[in-house]
Length: 100
Image (cartoon, rainbow, N blue to C red; front, side):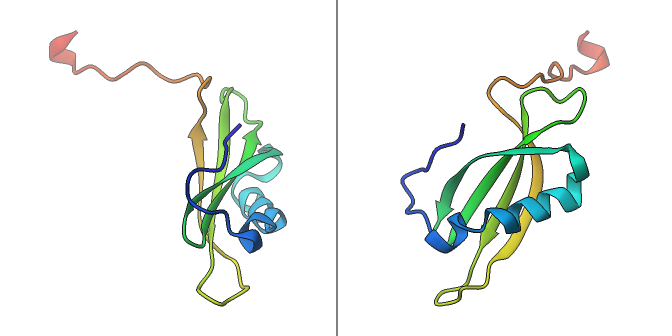
């Protein structure tokens, strides 16, 4: 499970799990699982992680990065991506045909 980094967590962004989940579901539909935690990425930037329940993507997770402007309480979705976790199944590294 992701943990908070040295960057200070923003309370408004940390509490916006529902905003992050809605963004993840807009991308992944019912293939978005439980909330796994969050990580502060910088000043007023935080990423929420959700389990991915896609067949063939064991160990992967949805990452939703949120941000907000200084002195604003409005949360903005920056990006929604699917990322491999530490125990994710990954394809082998690509090797050019000439080197096989």
